Amino acid sequence: MAEQDKPIPTALRDSRGHFLPGQQAFRGHPAVGKRHHPTRGELIAAALEQHRPELVDRLLGIALQGDMADTSTVRALEVALSRLAPKPKDSGEMVAIPGLADAVTLEGKARAVIEAVAAGEVSADAGQRVLQLLEIYRKAVAHDDMETRLRALEAAGGAARPVVEADPVIDFEDMI
Image (cartoon, rainbow, N blue to C red; front, side, top):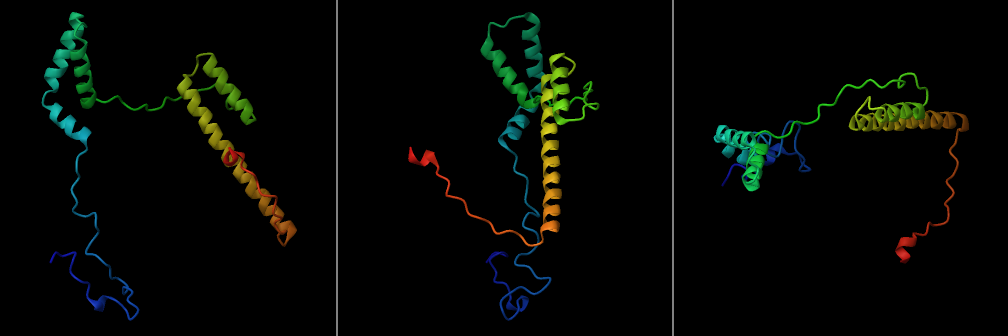
């Protein structure tokens, strides 16, 4: 009988069958001692790693000769090298957007970002990320404003008003 299959002694439980304080149903943490099983990508990268110098030399030789006639070889080398050296993730660039700090409203801030992208002062990707941050900020401000208003209403009104049920909403998509 394996260690996990052994019955747990009843002395570890109280009269209702619950575990006593400090007792547990298994021995140790279940993840302790488990080995990491490599993914397929890790296995492929490990198999290709020993051939890295030859792959790089071959690809550089083809590129320097300008012989792109054998596209299947070039594509195979490209795939192999992409496993050994994947594209680096975008680290995020530091951007300075003129007028962003001076704008008072969120609309003004968004306009400053769009104008900076249009003028080429900021990349489109960086502009999109800043606009997404502005949207997250807008939601946080709206949430805080709603929370403040709700607290003021609760403090002023005392008892809550009963909820009046509206007519049921008809979903026209169900009728089609």
